[in-house]
Amino acid sequence: MSSSVSRSPRSFWPLGLIVSFTLFVAGTGTLIWLSRQANLDLVRPDYYEAESIHAEETARRQRAANLPSRLQIRLDPQARVLQLQMPPGHETAQGRLEFYRPSAAAQDEQRLLGCDASGSQTVSLQSLAPGLWRLRVLWQVDGTEYAESTEFVLPAVP
Image 1 (cartoon, one colour):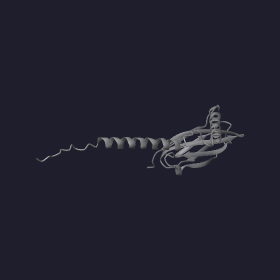
Image 2: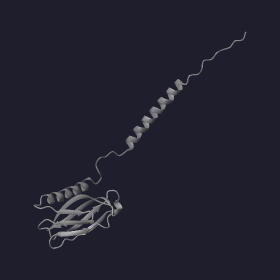
Image 3: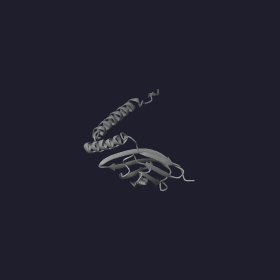
């Protein structure tokens, strides 16, 4: 008589469960370790300086908004010219124009504010690339600083 012992196929379920559980515990432990190493401070190291700068900018904008007449900014996109008209009493203002290009910081430009006797200035935008631009006008009159901002889009040159 030949005796044949039949073996049932070996099950890998226990091994799979052990490996899965071990990987889960190791992954969870790694995530906990990484999260404890991360710096989650919401306050900047230079918080007080940054808050002071922000407060000053807010005050400049508020002073400009409280003027009886506001700074007039007119754009002629086809001629690529920007026309500024200072508020009455601000014809002798000193300051600067800051052109920011959100998509390409290397193209940002600063120019001096140089109004004529009537408080008007024409600015050529020929050197600026087509697209979205943000303009910030900062000026000072009798030691008081003001600021205005606007956005505009320059079309492509035909």
